Image (spheres, rainbow, N blue to C red):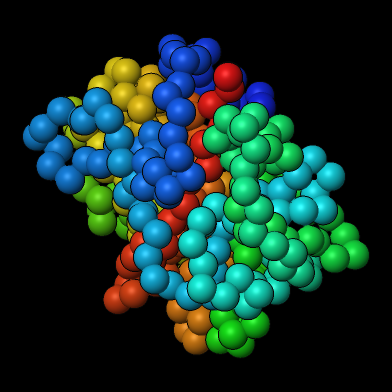
Length: 300
């Protein structure tokens, strides 16, 4: 089951549900690379910060970048505002494995009408590295993954299936509850790769004021985790103005790669003000965040 999230409707809905103010401070393109509505919770004995920072800042990982497209799905702007060789990015991945050729056009300046929203609504006014999609179009609602030929030379793109009628066996649930020392409250299948491999989200019962959601890549008895721990707060727990709800439907898998015997994921997580993008790599039986981006989309 695809979890495409509409930019205009979801951002508006989240703001209405969580009471987020529509008056937004104008920020620069450079600031958007480091500022998100994601809370950092390293010490769960402390209250969450009032102002959030990106848990996955841009790092020097070459060959993979993130962007968004115009309404027609024919042009792409990169989120990153500084790149040594933009022509190396030659493919775009959207909609869980759909790949298309792209061509670098130019780096353009933003207009005076730019409101810093990284959506197709503001695409005409936004600045950045501009690419053309060749011979097809991409989904305007999704964040996009741009890659180089060199990156693809040691990464295989995995095309997953939906999760209809996909149920976990009780032994897997028992193992996950034992590993996390918590009872599972909610479960959502994000992607099914094949009969043995799938990606799930688990929300656990809150222990005192400690909240936890875990992403799990399950390959038979092998499980690779990525945890989202937080201090429970009825206003802001995992994200600013999330109303104390993680929202399992708001996390989408943009791309899945195989690199040797390891799995890699690109995730897109919608919040009240925008989308946090995270590139996760399997290392030593766990997922490690290697690169991130942020797409500001709060309504005016």
